[in-house]
Image 1 (cartoon, rainbow, N blue to C red):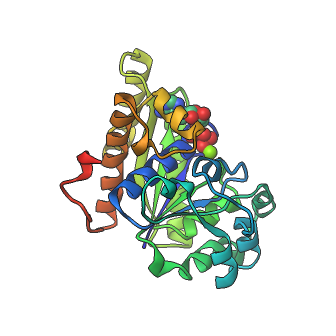
Image 2 (cartoon, rainbow, N blue to C red):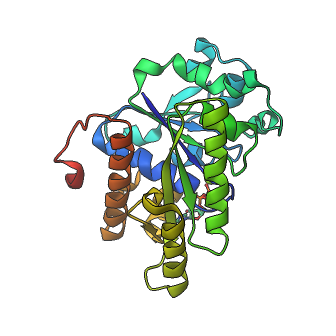
Length: 272
Ligand SMILES: Nc1ncnc2c1ncn2[C@@H]1O[C@H](COP(=O)(O)OP(=O)(O)O)[C@@H](O)[C@H]1O
Ligand SMILES: [Mg+2]
């Protein structure tokens, strides 16, 4: 089971969009996928169309990561109404904010890792949608992760923000979890015609080299449409959605390569 955190120090840059896009790609590929909604805003739970009735949520899990509680906080995504597969959500909650203090204890930091250990054999890949800070929840996510994807827009402060995130990852790797590594930087909302964006992307490349992942994600309305309808991007009609789906397929391949994961349908990626 490979665990990837999707993080950034800022809100609104595309963490949830990247989490949903990768989840959609993993679902299309037939990977058994769990999405953990660690952001108190719970957008990823909404985007994956879950019915929370009768379920616990991530705040209950962080309070007590016992197997029974973990399983009760996991619900199947409504995406599976459209096609079969395993894509589940560890349900988000506004109450998770209570676990996002600035000075978590070591015990608190390992809670999610402890929780995920109970479902280790049920999933191939776990994607964690993180809140936009470096407080306890993000550190809890990273302690449970193999890799972190840092999302950024090609803007004025993107180099500084990405640099801070990478340093923080390194700090956690050294101090707490040697298995943690950056997957790289996902550049979101890139406009190829914008000279400013070209300049900012070059700046990121000069600073971080191959850690800047490709493809960059363009700005596309299909993303917002699929999210608004709580449908997977790969099942959204139109060329625009198809193009974005291919981008997420490529990012997912990068994740799988980092995880040394076998591809269940090597040649079929482009045919979904
Ligand atoms: N590449 C993109 N193209 C179009 N809209 C986007 C793109 N990335 C993000 N958005 C939109 O921008 C808003 C913020 O993105 P979101 O993924 O929720 O950010 P975060 O989770 O980092 O706060 C959402 O409404 C989302 O649909
Ligand atoms: Mg979000």
